[in-house]
Image (cartoon, rainbow over all chains, first blue to last red; front, side, top):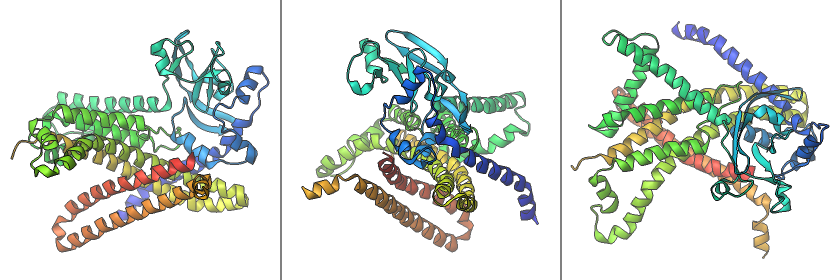
Length: 398
Length: 81
């Protein structure tokens, strides 16, 4: 009886979710048509003819009807300068984001990404090609392969090279991070307020939702792994746990363009860097003794010392790569299942597409549910391993 | 010289990526299979520790799967470049 009522409660949720997945999948089909729209003004023709990456050839080979699964997947998984939600009849529907560029000669340029018109227009001497920004080279320097445009050049800013610029825009990933931070602030400040207001009453509302999870992090992750000094590290562990979990969950929402925050290796690298810095700064002399002068026979030293020193660096790198690979691979699998529909439709006709869509949709829904588990699990594993490293760093002599 | 031209052929890179992804999946399968197997055995021996064992099994599976994912990402980078 209880199982039946749970099913009834979740039925509208599943229905809505599958409708959202199906419509977002079908609207993705018009992806490639925007590459081939030709505009009449000169600047538009110039940007269309520009082929700074040399890979628009592949689309032309198959004709404008072809669905390039690899391109579509990479476009959704990598960063972008606007939040691209769908294409309707060749027009892209997207939320523009601020572009912030600083260049040596022209100073700071701030404008919305809609001025680029999805890569078809030039603005202030900058163009957007395949989600990279290039600046028109007024000095006509360097190699003809650049076709009169310069790529981003951070070193050039410090050396004052004319035409060097750096791209500091609010991209989709940055916006995702800001959104995660906003959600976390909203949730946790309201919980803190209710704790301060009524400290000895039973928790209710958002408090009662978050309290078991916070206690879970403290009692299952921090206390057993760090040991008696866990309170020093608890704020960092809680922050990282909820940040990774919220960022992972944000990437699972189907329609709004998919924020691949933790699937960006720069983001996970910074998180791993935090763990690395905190571990080594709070390492006591027994920690360093274990790394640099462990209690082993002398003839093992040439073997163990390099391994231990590499281990100090490799452990955070592995943390970074594990989170990045798990989340990115999950997104790619879901996108690949949805592209299967269009690959079949292009090869064998629309009927085959419809037939495959049932199977594809079932698998995509299953993968999405699995990704919800993975979102929590990866946050748990990252936090647990960070706690274990902190525990090893502050461990007292037996 | 022939070997070099064969090795530098781009098509072999794609084949290598495919085989690599398959081998990574085999590795993950073996690892997680062993974890699941021993977890189930120990659950049968001690039913009162089932929830503890289940939690640790999931953690170990996530760590092993991380290793498989390194291989998958490398193969994906080969195939998509």
